[in-house]
Length: 231
Ligand SMILES: O=C(CO)[C@H](O)[C@H](O)COP(=O)(O)O
Image (tube, rainbow, N blue to C red; front, side, top):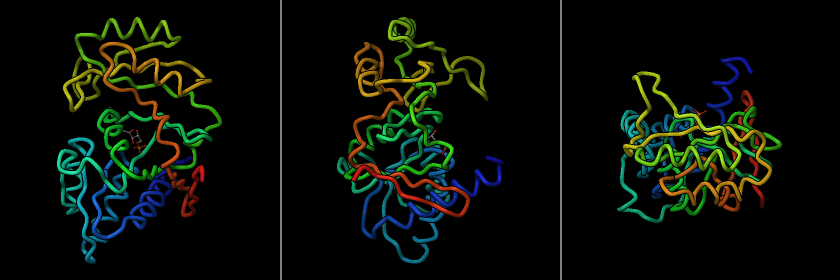
């Protein structure tokens, strides 16, 4: 997909998701370029009188939300929220996801759990028959070596994510490291998510397999979109 078609596809998905937000609700605000299009449209709708508050999943999401005039709140204030809008890196036919290229997946998983419904916004290239992207794993820095060894035991090829704008490992908004672990094709994402979660020092992986029943995926392709859900 060329860059302008990709951007248009992301905008289509993001804008469509923003239209699905109801007045008077608290929503989760995911992180990533596709969700930021949803925020852009939400900002316009707020200008037209929509009243919402957003729980941001990262400093970057909070920053964007402020730029678009979206009032912010916290998960502590709203441990139950109506809807979360988020992006993903890959989506399989059972609506299991790999997330976390933006290293925000730990907070994103908390917000998805708190939400009654989750809208995932992606471009069409992210739909896949089987998940095979690297799995980001947020880890306690103290346990980085241990977690890497355990990920290898599970068949992964772990690599500490290094900073693009800084030397050394990237530090998440929570003060932790991220290990990207390549498992190739993942035959059983549900089991792999559970096994990774069981490693001491792991705070959260980018595998999202428990939310399928409440997920709707808005898939943008140019100016067209389709909505995929299990119902
Ligand atoms: O999981 C994420 C951040 O942790 C993002 O939602 C995911 O990486 C997709 O980002 P983009 O919409 O920019 O492709």
